[in-house]
Image (cartoon, rainbow, N blue to C red):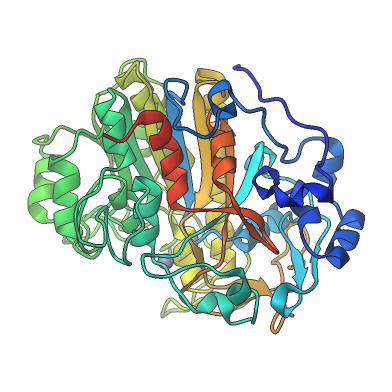
Length: 506
Ligand SMILES: [Zn+2]
């Protein structure tokens, strides 16, 4: 077990609101209007009282300087966990279902004239991380303006970043156009964190619960002017990078229920690439079964390059049929999570992450970069399918717990940075009584929370950022903006920038 960050037991008083960079979710409760501050005093979450909630971290030696780029003291290992489409409310619907408590619920009048944070409690492991801020997710040419976002209920619908632009921002620190995979607005390739890790002799990998060529994993490896070019993205991921681990859906021989097809479907990679991968002609060893993933998670010797492709079409579980879906696939209103029998014969996301971490740990003494995506939170949110959104969020929650366990067992917080965030919010998920203002989502343990979706697409809402380990404080320092509801926030590009600050950007 490594060195633990000291947690500040004191909540900064309201007089510190002119230095929002030091405010966390706990402390920023005082950052709203006078009315809000009064209400929040009465409604402080339990986490601030029991000392387990977010608190400011002690700055490391390099971070006490004037903000010049640090050198030499950064994280050896960096792990990004990205919930695709995971807004604050996607986190809380799962927490309500799992634990009967929420953490991020607010009562906000239009214009954010009155902001009241509901009593809440940190129930997810990442909600106990020392850094909790928010991130703006907009694409090139757009922006985030709290006056617009909270000015009217339709504010968050006025700009819709996509997963390619946002994943490119998280992977490269460069803001770009929607659909761009690892290229800038001029369609020029930009260096990503897996490439930087490899340049430093570190091992690197990407893991997802959706197809490996989908926008998020693709943006951490490849460079392509359009996200829909799956076959060329797959070709690049297979042949043109030193990356050690790629794991995700997209198997041509299996359907969404993880059943073998009569004929293959080459949607996410071309037949030539599949033949090369399955024929052992690429740099990768292919893992397909849960047993193979489990063995990779514990073996003392593992291949340097592993391609993990579970035997399922696109997503590990999200596409499976069940009584919560009508014959045409439309969601049955009011269906409970876990109504549909789970696909068997496929690994869980946390099992894939465990395998990836062990492979990367074995592959280099210099450290690692790993991106793990809970990709189908977005798919369920697009479909406005609350029960499946909760399932996917729960799977992602368990994966984060697994990663935290790995850090504390095999590494330490003194040499590893873990960041949990989202690329953007999907579905505009709110309570049933929202519009024109925003009201807290209510629900009890094991119950379907009472919610309404307001779009089948994305929103421009801020998303949560939780960070722990060496360098986490620097992420907090980038959170220079202040949102009247979500508090301190940074630009999504600054999350990658934090790592480049330490690892350099030649
Ligand atoms: Zn989406």
